[in-house]
Length: 345
Image (tube, rainbow, N blue to C red; front, side):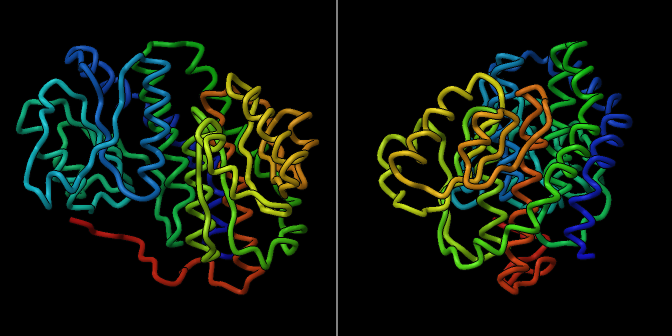
């Protein structure tokens, strides 16, 4: 097996371990957040971790009513300016904990008196040390260059922190069922390997999601770009209607992430337009039978609460990207031009 294949398969165990071992850290950080009472949250991240930040934007905004923005690290490094962050919760997310620009955001925020938190897979890293509080995503070593299990671990850490912050027994109950849902997703995704060859020659695609799964559209798109070297665009369902839908001609591949929840009616309406009016080739990730039936290919999900669905919905996308890369004859563990640790300033 390839390293990435093993690491995708490890995700239920990684999630289970993080939920079991990360609770105390999440509660400690949640207590500090309540005491600090931030006016807003600012998240500094790069690459895959940026997509985890997009998940936090919706999860903290919806469940904790906390406005969340994504930081612009170059303001701190290239322009040597620090925006006013004294009343902010500032979170740095990084698998390696090595990105200097993310560290600078955390360091500048802490100097101003902001509440700083880091989420990394490296407790001794510069970003972990820069923050007042650190939460380990506990994903274990990730050998493949393209992030898979570390991404879902970041999302799980954000979910665990939010459940602790809201003191929600219902959310904690949902979290305890998450490892089983991830394992079921892997089982439901087994047929992907058999039909991926159909897409061997695609050169472009679109990836669409909304709300909690806006991050999933971005992350699946990133995996396809990293592993398959093809061009893709990622959009919110709402934004895609405002012009970019013109990209879609007959046979254009579109990944549609449409699990059950508040966003399903809008996603289902757009999916219908893509299929009936634009004649798109839709690959549908959903746990809704009607949505799955409209897809050229169905990537089914188990029944899972909407707020946790991104942790499972990304898995079929990871597998599709891996199998498509193999069909194209590319390396899946060491893609061209990628390194495991990218240090940006």
